[in-house]
Image (cartoon, rainbow, N blue to C red):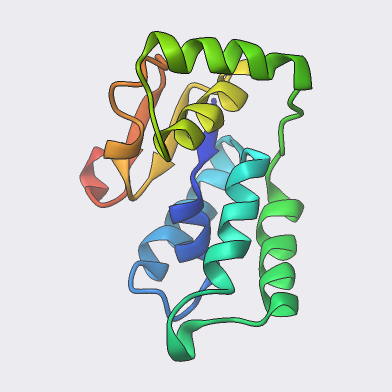
Length: 148
């Protein structure tokens, strides 16, 4: 199965000092062997942004963020293409669902993943994706027994 990986899981999985690192890293390792993992380009960019703006000693440099993402995401996940014409389909979907503000990006991520047949998305922030009518299973890593 194709499983989308949200930026919350990417950041936790690549940052050794993140409070959820062990959980995310173990999930990534296990699922890399069992499934095709997908990351929307927006999730990769958001991961870079978060890694480079974390508070204090947790913040990594731009080159460290690049290296972490290259080693984990580029080496192991597919970044689905997004046809720019599909932005209008995405906007129509947002209007239909009355999605506003930052949730627009979450709907955009789902649209990209759905376009390549992704059946699930894994995240530490499941509320970001609920009620977006994606038809995708939401794997909530904050509830480890839910997986599979």
